Image 1 (spheres, rainbow, N blue to C red):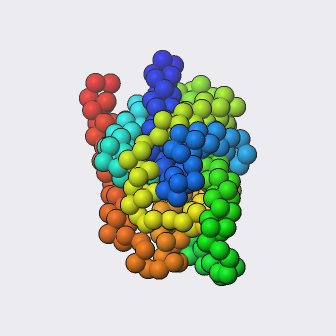
Image 2: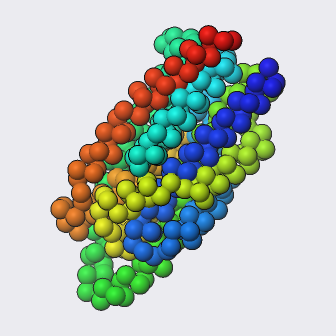
Image 3: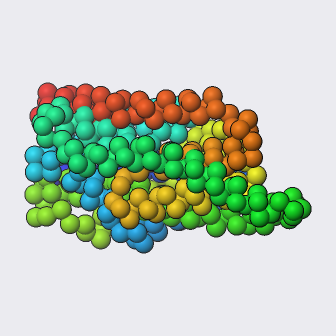
Length: 328
C-alpha cells in the first residue's frame, strides 16, 4: 500500500504541475497583455510568487479539500488516483484548446466522481461542497464588481493626468499587482494538492490525523511553481488579449481586485477558482472604460467551459475509478 500511496502522491504533484501550467495565465495574462513585461520575465516572477504563497496564507483551503469533498474515513487511495487522473485529463484537454478553466474545480469534480463511483452519493460531504459552489458564484461576479470599481476609481482620480504618465506609473505598479495576484494564487490553488496529498497519506494509514507536514507544503509549492514557469501560452493569449485589450491601469485594477478576493477566500478556507476571479476582474476593468471594450462572446465561451468543468471532470474521475476497480 505504501508503494501505491507514493505513486498517488506523484500523480497529485503532476496535477499540481498541470495546474500551474494552465493557471500561470491567471497571474501573468494582464501584465503580458499590456506589454509591461515580456512573457519569460512575467512567468518567472509568477512562479516565485506562486511558490511563496502557501507559506504566507496558511492551509485552510487544504483542510477543506482534505475533509470537505468525500468522507476521508471511507475514500481509498485507488479512488483518489482515479479522481486525480480525471482532473489531470480534463485540465490537459482544456489547456490544449486554450480554455482557461478552473483547475480547482477539475480537482473537486474528479474527486467527486471517484467518490460517487466507489462509495455512492451518500459519502459526499455536502457542507464542504457548498463552499465550493459558493466560490463558483461569488468569484466571477465579485471579480467583475472589483474590476469595475477599482478601474472606475483610477479613471476618476487620474482623469486630468497625461496618458503617457498614467501608463508609465501603472506599468510599474502592475509588476507589483501581478506578483500580488500570483502570491494569492499560490495561497489558494497551491493548497489544493496539499489537501489531496494529506488525504492520500491518511487513507494509506501513513499519518494518524489529517495534519499538514511541512514537506507536503514544500513539494506542492515547488510543483506549482515549476508548472507556472513552463506555463500555457495559449491560455495567456485568451485572457491577456482575446477577452479585452487592457491599458496598464486596467491590468493593475484587475490583478489587485482578483488578489484581494483570493486572499479573502484563502483566509476563509474557500477553494475558489483563480480563473473565475481574474476573468471577472479583467471583464470589469475592460467594461469600466466602455461596455463594448469587452469581447463578451469570448467571455461566454469561457463561462461555458466553467459550467461543464465539474460535470466533465467528475465523469472522467468516475470512469478512471471504475477502470481501476476492474483490475484491483
